[in-house]
Amino acid sequence: MIEIHSITDVDLPRLAILLEQLSEEKSDPVKMIESYRRIAGDDGYILLGAFVDGALAGSLMGIVCHDLVGECRPFMVIENVIVAEECRGKGIGKTLIEAIEKEGRKRNCSYTMFVSGIKRIGAHAFYESAGYAPDMVRGFKKYL
Image 1: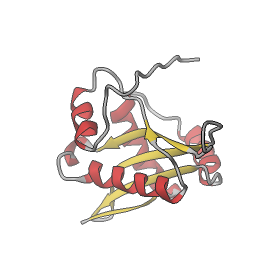
Image 2 (image 1 turned 90 degrees about the horizontal axis):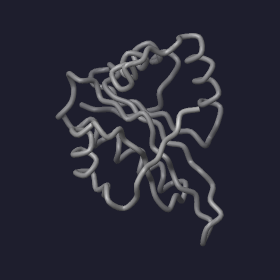
Image 3 (image 1 turned 90 degrees about the vertical axis):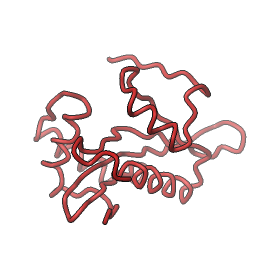
């Protein structure tokens, strides 16, 4: 059974392993704890984990952004979506997406959005199956 709830500091070592699968980059444990504490203390961040038999199997983060357009409703950026390689195809990603969308609705967000690396073809097929249209916008990213 898949359980979705907030990530805690106890989950950070396993989250670091998952994020390395996503980014192919190791997280600095000290900086990760510092960042986690800032995120955990900010209501604009939602850091969810999917747990299977008590073990962290996937995660994502939602960031609520205020807007000045139209009705000035906030929107949510989804980031760091990852399901452990050995757990893919079991509904974990879908359950995570549904949970973060539910959180967005609670916060009156008008939409959710994210970017995905161009080479992540399997992830793109998953996002499309979750109702995200790739042709609505074009993402741009610049590393600083």
